[in-house]
Image 1 (cartoon, rainbow, N blue to C red):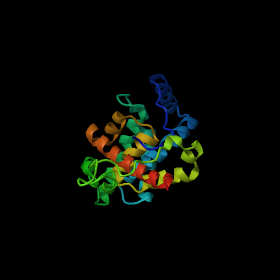
Image 2 (image 1 turned 120 degrees about the vertical axis):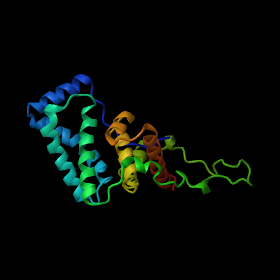
Image 3 (image 1 turned 60 degrees about the vertical axis):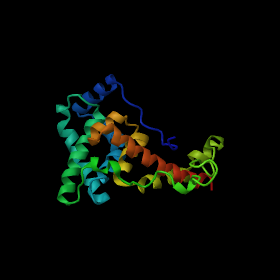
Image 4 (image 1 turned 60 degrees about the horizontal axis):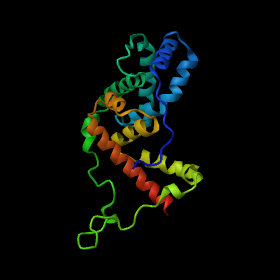
Length: 218
């Protein structure tokens, strides 16, 4: 089960995206500013998966936005605008990472963190009754009031848990559960298989859920 999430961005219809692209090509500053607000955090998170520091990641994002402005007339719509923007970020981040001599192909992170997604001590051993079952089931979060699930402190727990993830997991969960990207958009932007994307997302969600359990269940 996925952890509690921030409200994802709603996907644009084909007509809405065509109108957005037309306004960008016409130099509409408000449209560009809204696009930056919509995607900046996700772009920064993706860039952080390839470069050493936040400062360099911010430079990558700035360069990517210049690439968007310079390349929007060549956007052909073969992918969503969001996927196209993220591919620009990834390509620039890879180049910067290579200059830092620390880049690793994103797909190599598919087995990142081979530790179990949930602590094995939470399950019964072979010598106990019902081996493999939970020792104590996770709390029923549905019974908690909404303000407990969505309060500032809980959201900070989620944010910290995501920031603590290995880079590839952090990128995927940010794109899927924060930005609302589809699996196809993630795979297209990051050049990973659907299987790799699902593994990374599962591990990331499990980590965040464990953090939430510790916070909500005391």
